[in-house]
Length: 261
Image 1 (cartoon, rainbow, N blue to C red):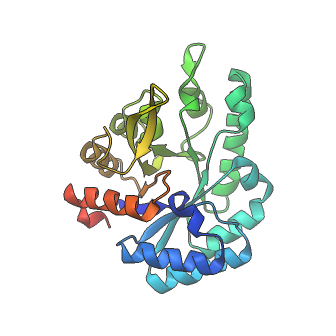
Image 2: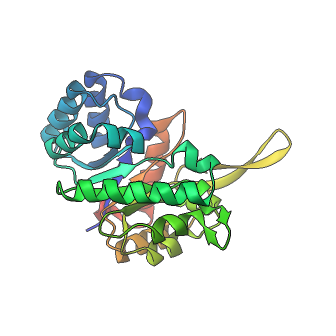
């Protein structure tokens, strides 16, 4: 069954040491969170040992981790080791490389080839590589979107997906529809609301705590459940992470999805 998690990017300022990691996980657990997508730690043995120690103590799950393609390629053996240590199946590529963001269709196709190759290597180790998009991927390259090039040039068995509700909306897509359309590839969904706000005499997009923006999380969560998504990770860029997480958790509970925690 799908499970609510927290993407630790949200609380990254509270993960600066092994002790801080343990204290932050204990706080998340006290809020009713039992799973995380791990990101923005130093990835040293001491940090991984701290994560293992506190998750075992609290009965929490590391559902997935997130790191750059460059890191996952260059530190492949260590990455495999830490995922097996944490009993974590999903390895997430966090962002499109800058060369692809600034490059053209050929650069994107070359990256897709490397992504497929890396995914195959992780699959041979019993792990699953996932790709996390932003809005860069929804720009047009000839007759195709960048996202379509990536999907058409990789295989579901080697490259799965982390879909992000905020970035989908910002890229011009409807989150619940994209989750349904890619049900065979999506393993994790990042739950982030979307709203626009005034800044310097203009309206600009920003993410928000769930329930404070324009997205319909009842439809999104139902789509996640139908797609058999493993984890729905709450994420937000915020200066008040625990307050915002509380709002998001409460919104999910108000929608009557307490069984997902």
